[in-house]
Image (cartoon, rainbow over all chains, first blue to last red; front, top):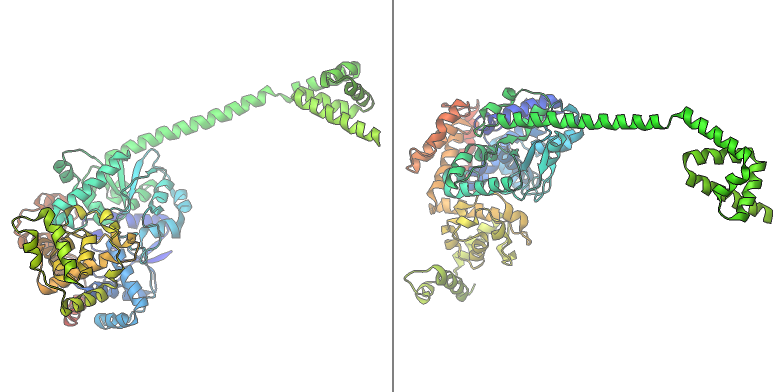
Length: 394
Length: 212
């Protein structure tokens, strides 16, 4: 898979571990990323809050460059992804606006390229089975909540790769890595975005609600796919803890960090040392748990194999054959007694006696069944009698 | 829209939180919607690509809004103001600056009203008029775009510095500066793209066209 790569400003700054781990993840999964030539900022929320045309023209320049390259474009940042999707949609569906935009950016734009989110690429284009194949260090024992935030899944008309209320793509990826993805209520709640900077009394409360719900459902870490969500939940967690007088201690990982780590990449290569909430200790703990769980699973598998072996020993074929031979002899010596053992009804037992006296094959079959399962032997004997009586009626 | 509608709305608002002025005093200050108000609303609706009269005031937007707790008028009431042609009041609402553009309201609206887009449109109209109820948010947006205009990319260090200076909070978030630098997450100097002139042209041309 070959993609144009639009890192966006955050992935080279405040969310740089997301950028580093996206590149590692792509390499591990065999995705070729070609950085978009001379890309510019998408304008993000400040753009569309200020000027509608500007908010369309800034991403349009990038899309036009991607069109020239003839490649679909990966935009891991949720805000960049959203702005480019909105522009793509506008260019495709509003011819007048397309012309205005083309005039502003002084380039041709047709809306032929598609912007992809990292979750769409991982879960839908690569697929969780292929990701699971690459896992060498499963994250067994990790208890995570997947936090999608707003713009990866909304508005669904522009995004559309997952459910806007209960998205699953990240959950599926995290599970493929061996971790537990817990269900929770704040999957798609807003982290406050730039409000934590401009209006911290509003933004911090929004962060608090998310962190609290994660803790309530028993999560030990949060997984995200947006650099703004990541930075807010990670960098400002300390301030939120202080403001609300509580302790969360929830490391916040980018989904790409976890994919790359589980596939054997080093922590340094994905930027675990750049987190604000200490993120290495929990990975150590998960590694320990993973060892333990693996050992338990192996022990269980071994125990199962051993018990099967023991069962096999119990039913030694030689001993079984001896028993069957002895039983056949008993049939030859005392057919009447054997017939009565198999059937209670005297008349029917008499018929069975005739059968086994005449047909040694049927006698041998019954002898074998009596060794293995006496109930089945009785049923077979009964069936022989019924068939014989029918034959006589004719 | 009849004037008594407006009277009713304001009366109910002030009967809860009003101080000093009586309901009647407040209500008589209202005037019926004029043609300009109606025209303005039509223009805003067209820009937002939605129709406020579709709204039947169920309140699902306000219920799901993660920032409603901090708003003076929750989203449903902003729409109600618009339905009553009270565009001026809607433009003065602090809510339009508190809205984080998370799109939950638009995603959940059973009538398909694009509330987030309306909030966006109201913010832009307030900016055009220089009627900015929340200067902090507007200052952040301005500082953000200033960096993009100059360098073609976001200049995070410059953004925070400029935002702090504009809002007279010089030491805001200063505790994060050094840790960010230690982690290599913020560079003192901006990253610039090669063709900055192209981006500057985009800014100039959109300004020429007067936005939308």
